[in-house]
Length: 264
Image (cartoon, rainbow, N blue to C red; front, side, top):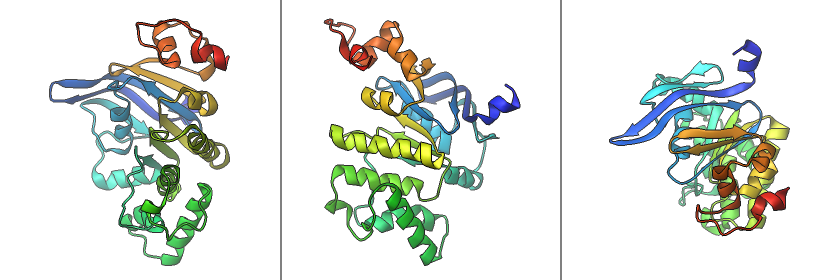
């Protein structure tokens, strides 16, 4: 890979294996995630998607293989070195994972205080900026219990961007949301990419979201990358595995044109 090609890659994964006892979850993953783009990470349940992205912030260490983030191999980094990586790569967990005993502002500020920031004026500014980005200005004093599901997701996203990362990882950001609220989350994800230059990696099963926001698609199956390409290439693919996934069909398909035809 040339230096120019390397500069266009934000996360590079090579020969990645992960095991949990006898369960061999990742079986030699090779994949690049382009800088400043939105990648949709797809695949059936148990295919290894969430396990894969947890390696990007050091929540899991490879059984074998390497992970390079923004030109730095993080495979063998200690916790102190990983602290820098975690400021550059943030994660929005499935369900939001907010602290119910904290206000919205305290939830968003949590990463800043964990890193040792003590300047309350700077913390307040960062929190206000993050809430502005996710279209929740002036909501700092509310409690998570006062918020709708969509608003809770927005607060979780504000917390993910409060440290001004280069990359955000999303684990099923549309889970539990109605289509309209899910569409608003898509707009926010795309806004982070186009206006702030953030690299997005989105684990999702929502195919309409893939066609709305993704520049790059990676499809995993049984712990390996089965296919990757653009949303348009996925839409046009005749591969039966991809078509069944995109159209939401089991192998015992009953026919019909499905979403591919609708999107086309």
